[in-house]
Image 1 (tube, helix red, strand yellow):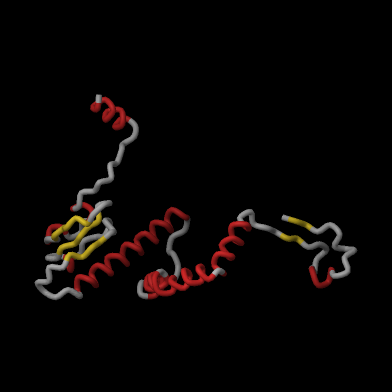
Image 2 (image 1 turned 45 degrees about the horizontal axis):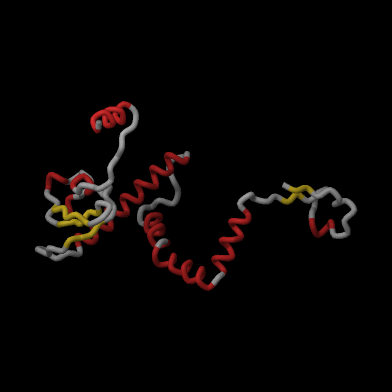
Amino acid sequence: LYRGESCRECAVRERCTTGEARIVSRDGREPLLEAMRQKLRSEEGKQIYKKRGYTVEPVFGEMKWDGRKLSMDLRGSVKVRGEFSLMCLVHNVKKIVKRVLDLKPGDKTVLKVWDRASVIVPEMVGHTFGVHNGRVHTPVYVVENMVGHRLGEFSPTRKFVAHGGKMAKAQGAAKK
């Protein structure tokens, strides 16, 4: 924050400020913002930014207008993050269902899915999904009793989850 000290004696004071002094505020991230502006003004930056119009922005538009979601219902960063995650989950399930409905009866095409958190809906029964496990797509054939579960529950993952606290001590003792 900068406050001009000699504004009263300045010859162009009327063009600069309407008050007694001019106050200029600068964001601490200004160098980063300026670097990003320069990047976006470059030819490469313009080409990359142009791709947003047909890759990223339609997704947000669909989530806002088709979902009738013009603003968040909840307040607070944790709650808003949760609400947005639910919107993304719905969007992903709708995409999967659309791909399933586009298949012809008896089609054995494996639909590749990267979102392990996608909920299995009745339209997915009878189809095979390649669920990504961190390295490859594992085929999962969906049957009726899987409805309501998540695709990732039926595809083993390579990711090891280490437990903290007492569990970590027990695991350490078991290794010895």
